[in-house]
Length: 551
Image (cartoon, rainbow, N blue to C red; front, side):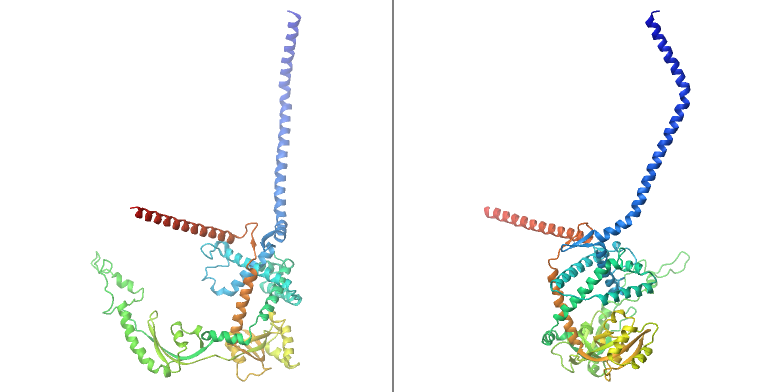
């Protein structure tokens, strides 16, 4: 064997020996190494999972202040270039919504609105939800508010909100206590989940300034007596009253079939049959007739109306004497079937007529007495609604033992009334009318013997009113016309100053804007399609005409 072959053999033997030694020994070492690597890997995974969970938890906790920060700083909508955050939008949204609910509370169910459920799931119209509707109202309010505030600032208008804002804060405290919640909870429930007294203070005070400016505009645009009289002359029927007498003659409709009844078609359901046991089966028609009232035929109704007309003609002869008296009724409150006849300018005392009401199957015998403008004056009064710790009699006794003047009564109002809105002006109510008061209060205020300085405590439906009578004011018709003219003027003014106010929705929050855009696009498409069709029809007609001429 050569030297090189021996070296090679020795090397192979050595490698085999080392391989055998490594195999036996390293099994334990390798196992321990693998276990340590596994432990380190699991530790790394556990650490990573823990970090992820911690980050998620931190993000969740941090999201509350982040959401609050965004609500108070991030732009929600832009009105005429002015940024509006979520807090301000919610304040206006909820104010508008709450006013609507208060105004139409008893009718909301008829509108299909359930305030206890999600507004975004209830439809206001075919395309808008109630949430969309209230958001649209909020945007319109923001447009008007921003425009009026800008105008007020440009006009140099100022208003001290101190007293009014303090009253607002007291109202919040009182209302929260009555609801059994904290002030913070109450503010959030009324003005939005991000609202606090501090965050909404600016918006509340701006509203107060805006309202004061709006009131000034109303006063500046109040119509003159000549303008009021001129408006009345053009709309007399709306403001005049009538006295008349009325007798109603109802047709005596049959409650069961007569010889004029519609013939009944005989069917299996209406034919008596005999059961398998030999007894007569129940007549289906007879059974059904007990469930619903009989519906007279047209012929039966016509006959009943014909008989009633004879009685109505007789009643016309005596209605001026025997008819039910109706006094001081406005056209808006008179039955629409007879109102035009009563308010006809040709009408004169002693006129009578018979008017048919086909829907109700009756006749009206009517006698006209007179038409006139009711000049009954309104009244100015001061009112205290006592708090629970004082009775009306105790307040009047304190007033009588003091200066017993109108001013001292106003001071007692600030001291004792629970009507916080009346505190600032000492419970003053001007130009109250009979139609605007309960019967008990109206009877006292408008008693012909009433004198300035008269006082009384009256309880109506568990609520006590302590009244101080100041004196008479303008008649109701003048007040109504004044309010109508001022309202028309202000509506036009607001329409003018908001005509060019822009609305931007950078975050796409307002769904009603999307709906409007879709409807506008659909309308444009429909118009374009109609125009195209019209052009096509004209071209077709022209082609046909050319072909006809060529023949």
